[in-house]
Image (cartoon, rainbow, N blue to C red; front, side, top):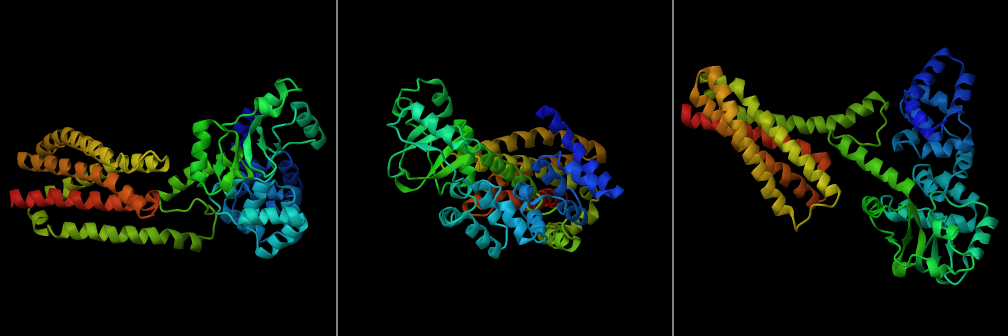
Amino acid sequence: MPETQKIDQRKEYLQKVSTLLKEGNLNDVRLYLHTLHPAEIAMVLESLPVEDRKRIWSLIPPEIMGKILVGLHEEVAKGLIEITSNTDLIQAANSLDSDDLVDLLQVVPEQVVAKILKKLGKEQGAKLESVLSYEENTAGGLMQLEVLTTRKDVSLDAVLRLLRRRGEVPNATSSLIVTDRDNIVQGALPITVLLTKPPESLVSDWMDKNVVLIPYNMPAADVAMVFEQRDLISAPVVAENNRLLGIVTIDDVVDVIRDQADHSFMSMAGLDEEQDMFAPVVDSAKRRAVWLGINLLTAFFASWVIDLYEATLDQIVALAVLMPIVASMGGIAGSQTLTLVVRGLALRQIGQANALNLIIKELSIGAINGVAWAVIVAIVGGLWFQSGSIGLLLGAALVINLICASLAGTAIPLILHKVGIDPALAGGVLLTTVTDVVGFMAFLGLATAFLM
């Protein structure tokens, strides 16, 4: 079946599995699961309530459990690992490449990790332990240990004979890494060169000496950026003095990009991308309560600002009707700027060299939009309440709030990033507070000064 057609059918998998579960015939469920890719089974599992998920998991053969587990969000994976026997976990681990195995070992119980490492043998176990020592979101934590290497003074024919004897190559291998006797990277030999150039020629005649090297401590986000900018399929990971440690492949980079997108999207709502959609109600409520509480505090602060102008509102009721316009417009304008800056920080496009220029640009945009929309709302507000003064004050407050919103949308993420706080997580709450408070103070303050 063509892959594009299979992708289109994925939306039907959940419905099919749910229907079979309701019918109660687990044998039909098992047979249907055999037709799915492990990644598709992982998608179905994450979309099912916990009890149905457990019933499905009991039907999964251990030899594909590992591939499914590494495709799940961490919280879901941990829940399934808790109901999986140690024997099945060890068998599941044995079916994985080293990079996926490292991901699995980070979520299984420690006693099982020890058994898996022992099962792999002393040498391979020691290598995996060394990989586990690297931070998870770095090149060292992403890399796989299976790397094809060669020397520069051998012929292409000799390399081909070696590959035939090996019988297989690691996933997503685009090049052989050329190293010396001390395992120092000398270059890379693309598979395409190996297959198309004269077999009697030497590796040194065709190898790429400008191969991109990834330091083991490079953040995963930066690794993804290098792959995107250089159109890489794989790249060697090196320690000091360019000593080869492993290789990062495009499949792992795609996972990083997906995780970054999930993180940015979920953080805007104060949520964690690793959370289980069907986690227990009480646990989910507790997590969301934290940010609801923070938002409540900021809402009380905004309400306190409104209360300062209680006398003004009592005498001019029209202000209460119109003031949400100022806060809402400021919130939208600030969110646009905030989103732009958060994205720029994530892509490493914003730094000390251009931050001031960006602030000036966003302030200018805020001023232009503020004046343009102020004219419109001033006319509408004035006609609505038959008061030119109220219309003018509404327009003036809108200009002030849109300029402040642009400044806050730029400054807040820059400051949060500087102090090590994720701007995607905290920026929205702070921005809403600023635009609400400034909007209310500007509108009600001007009204108090000029109409009372």
